[in-house]
Image 1 (cartoon, one colour):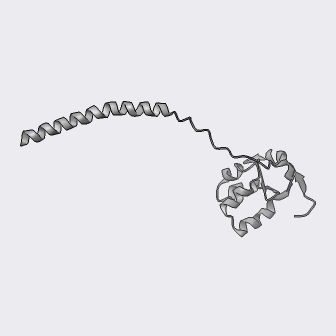
Image 2 (tube, rainbow, N blue to C red):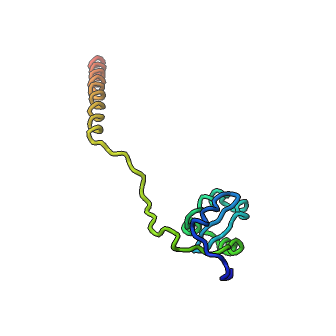
Image 3 (cartoon, rainbow, N blue to C red):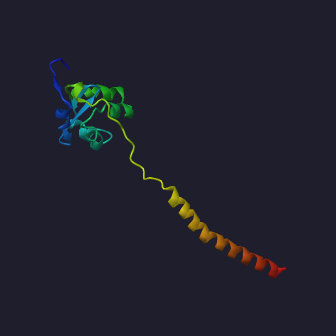
Length: 134
């Protein structure tokens, strides 16, 4: 890994995002892992899904071995221009449907309108059976 390697923008690296041409950014370095896709223990889709972004967290979260980290050297093609990687990517949770308290109360009332008469009927039947057997 010499200093003669090219500096790539994230846009340039992002163009390599398929099983036929797959580049990743890990720890500020750019790797062409296309030839490794078939051999990757987690499958090629894991690597392809990490294209177009800084994949450092994805790589670290898996807990790769020292051997895996050393393997990266043979796929090294250059470094990433850090200014092209978004710094504040905000992970926003999906929008939850609005909880309508009025509809919940309405549902409970309807449920009780069904269950209370049913309970009274069951109690009446139980009393009749109990008094009949006495």
